[in-house]
Image (cartoon, rainbow, N blue to C red; front, side, top):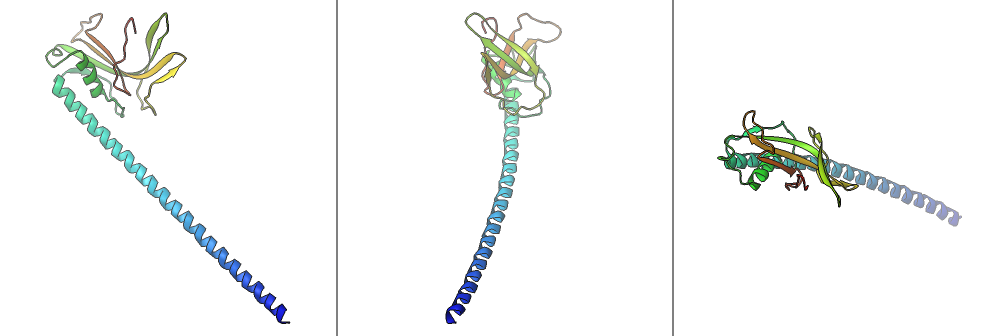
Length: 194
C-alpha cells in the first residue's frame, strides 16, 4: 500500500510543480508583454522628439539661409509662392546657390526682380536629342525629394529662379535662369544643349 500512497503523493507533487511552472510562465509572459509595451511607448516618444528636433533644425537652417541671402544680396525684389514646408534645399539656399554661381550681388540686382517657383520637372537625353519639361507646380510636401530615373527620363524637384529687369520689361533670353535641384542644391544644366 505504501507504493500506491507514494504514487499519489508523486502525482500531487507533479501537479504542484506543473501549476507552479504554469504560474511562472504566465508571470514571465506578462512581464515580457509589459516590457514590450513600455519600450514601444518609449520609441514612440523618442520618434516624436526626433521629429520635433528635426523641425527645429530645419527652422534654424531656414533662418540662417534667409539671413545669409539678405546679407549677400540685399533687399531684392523677390516674387515667390509661399512654401511653408521643409525641403532638403530651402528657397533661400537655392537662391544663394543660383545667384552666387553667376556673381550676382546687391548692386547688380538693384534694378532686377527675382522670381522663384518650385516645380516637378522631367529631363531626358539620348544620342540625338535632349530636353526638359516643367510638369507641375509643387504646393504640398513630398515623401522623398530624391532624383528618380524612369525609361531615360530623370525627374527632379526643381527651384526655378528667374532674374529679369524690374517692371514690365522682359528680356529674351532673361539675364538669369537657374534650375536648382531641391534635394541636392545642384544647378541643373538646361538650355538648347540640355
